[in-house]
Image 1 (cartoon, helix red, strand yellow):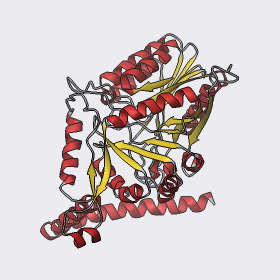
Image 2 (spheres, one colour; image 1 turned 135 degrees about the vertical axis):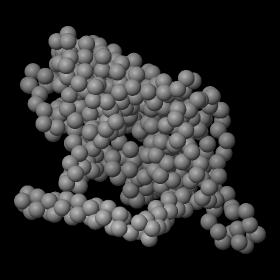
Image 3 (spheres, helix red, strand yellow; image 1 turned 120 degrees about the horizontal axis):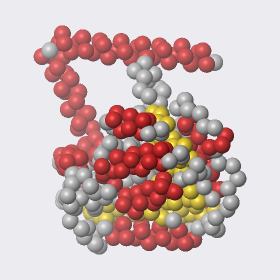
Image 4 (cartoon, helix red, strand yellow; image 1 turned 90 degrees about the vertical axis):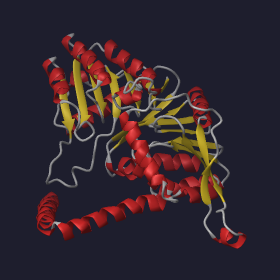
Length: 435
């Protein structure tokens, strides 16, 4: 089943938790200690008190701001709680790989997977009159849920935990007619990366992509451009107001090349767009946690499903059409200048108005801060300037600090260099020992 946005997906996730009878595995990059986080925590604790074996795995960086009180509450109720890859100051390389998965699975037979973290942003509860972030998940039942359960066991063991054989799914009866393939992403394996390239190469009619943090590697961008040149209807839906403004500006750097290739690009005009989906040829649907950027495709632990099902793909295409109706299409126009000068300059990017105006949305403080940062960056006329201007300001500020507070800045710089040197040496000797 296709689940759109937090209210719909959370209801199904809470139902999965409530119906668990033997064991429950819950894994997420961010679990906030806000109203939504406590709603989940209270139900997880209740299931543990009822005798269900409940295991919760969170990422130590993604959930860094979560109150320890929430983890303590869960442990006191009998829930096994583990942090994935705790921060180690001297392990520079090891700290890079994060657990970015979003999964809940009960008894190895029923699961919900998608792009949603656990927090009020996904329900619109941050402020009165707020709207939920736009996100997508799917409910999976049958053998694929068992494979998702086994993927959880692998990351749980990496975090130092142990799962008894009785709490690992074995043979599960098939349900439905959809073909589901589970893509368990691990650092350096490029599983989802290769899958998306195959979808780009194999699509013959349509390839519609929704992504929250688009910074695709050149190889993937080239695959999308080649598909568009071959006549495939390639469309990209990205946030118009990302919660990470630098990522939004970096993603715009490649817009002109994509547009020249015939790819159509839309920027979402509502609250934050956080979905990570692909629908190809009305047949294949990919949903999960992987963004089209190097950290997801190459560096993180991710979890996605590729589903071959006409009905689901048609529902996803309908949703995509609804989303682009609320989005602004990015187009090119000549720079306003005298004829010869205008022809010599690169085209400017402009937006077409959305077909449907979004409903009034009251922004939270977090969203207001992000949009303010975006507005400041919009003062620069191109994405390149909005990326490199902050870098210039940063280096000028550092230079001023060295001139005005030379002793203090030198000591601080020395401490940072010593820390990096010790961490790098530790990594070098560890690599040599591994060989």
